[in-house]
Image (spheres, rainbow, N blue to C red):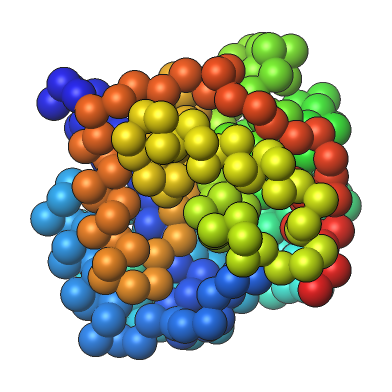
Length: 294
């Protein structure tokens, strides 16, 4: 792959930190402590990764990140849903606490944890982010959404700088042409998350949890595609999303040094993938983790 494309891929990466000080994911049983965090951030920084995604709800994530040193990173954090229901003052206090924990004077982005939070009182939401921008606490703001219908409701009344949404080789709902046209009309960036479906897309299909067995043929198809391209399933899942020009940022969770090194190596893969070449699913029981039963 040409160096320009490699650099573009690296710049899209936002390091997800849900497992920094916290266990996250259906197949994840480990978390990152302070020393791990310092090492991971150094490796990421040296590779050119410059964005961090975190949240107050991620256990001690913000605190650990702040102690690790974030001066060279653009940081995105969230307003959690429960705090937002308590009013703007409570949310402002949470934002100030996040800045203190992160040891940052401002954030690259502030994300409403859910569309429901933002839509509870859109006027209050808009006034809050406008004030945060005017005061210099944030550069941009967005909303974390789960399905395109939520995006449409937000676009009817507002123009966020970005929406963070689930996108993967198995889930192409937000890459639909009509949906993307609304992003372009609003000048809103698409930030992809859940690229690996909490690890399912890189799991050996023979070792999937029992409640996912009905989708084994889909997962086997991805294994066969990766084999034919002579790349790993991790590379297949990653490149199918990060190389899509409609996506401006990709949040990728990392909790171990080998995971981060695999990510960096994958960004330099030779193969350029076309997401349209692969089967995907419209079954919400698979692509929406809120519906999972374990």
